[in-house]
Length: 540
Image (cartoon, rainbow, N blue to C red):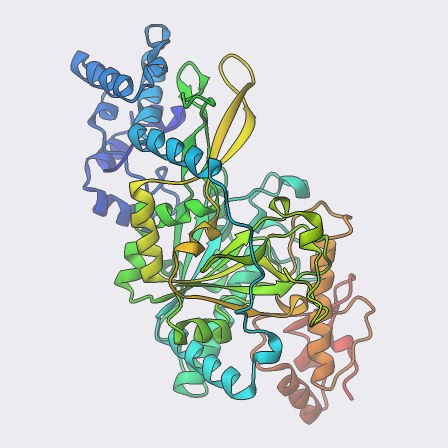
């Protein structure tokens, strides 16, 4: 069933004939149009209710609405109906019909039951492929398998990009943020250019030097109601950073109504429900509802690399990780990093019984979190969850089907703005890793923090996880690349190497020395806060 999703402005816009025509199209046709027209007013959630094609409701439609809310024990949603204008009634109707009220009730009841259950204490996790375990033969075999997945279009990437840069001092989507690199590229641009590069590397690894990209990697980008339009505009304004627009699939994260502790839906105003995002774990249902999951299946995607928008060092579609997981027939997996210190506020992977799950730092006793294995001297709970996940397409589909029947959400007690002022209420949230215990095969692989993880979460100037620390992490990594290739860097801040570099760093130096020219170094690399180019480097 397709539910209506309208703001008051969108309701008023229905007066336009072209938009009324859009509503009359069959859902699959409309989604196709919406996917191609990236400025379309409507999201992928379809707007099929005939009620919204008219400026008034019939008495029968009004009776049906009242019957539905009463049956769900939510009759108070219509308490102010008699005082609402026609447009306000339409918005309230759209808000109510956005949700399956029976599902909301059932999910809240199930979530309370789960929260009340006594959980077994977690146990340290042993099954992790560490950096020491990565022998040369395994690395070569898994990387080759990963490149083959990418080159044949059987791998895709999934970006969680619903957040705004509020803590960074920006109202724009976090992916639009410039962390202050010499190139001034946004996080979105860094990711897009890395995707272009991995496509080319995979094509050449499988089909030979200079091979053309035969299957562009599909990029699924989950936004939120607040970031959807500006994210699409950012990509369009920058010509999709050189990507083929058809390989991108934008879709929105879901929402759920905010509830009182008794399970009654809170009214934000007399004509609007209080709503909140359903957490990044809402990605499973959002993939299904938007048509993204069907798109994956129709393009033959088998393996999905998933990551968060605020990791400035993310290695998209890492062929080693993809090949490792796919070769082990993994349902879901994760790249993990060793905890920086015992008190680091990160969730860690652990076991409960036979299942792998993530235990949040707030759930663990501080002494237990800091406990050390006497045999190794290492932390017992050492492996951090940094939101770099792998999913088989089959597992994504299975989890979407499971959650359609009944959600089991985390219950967050919050002050909720309402028509009567702030009230104590409940938000229902699902985390993306909540499904891990349902997997039959889970793979965890250690990666080096310094080369793959630089979060951008805190305000500029913060001592950790800030734009400054992320920028330094990138430029320090790229400086090591140059030094390993035989070069040196004059800038004390390091250097930035563009993902679009047409050859390896070592080959770049060889080319420059052969020509006795530094000009070949200027295009792909920059260094220093004053936008110093790589030609300021001295090669040996």
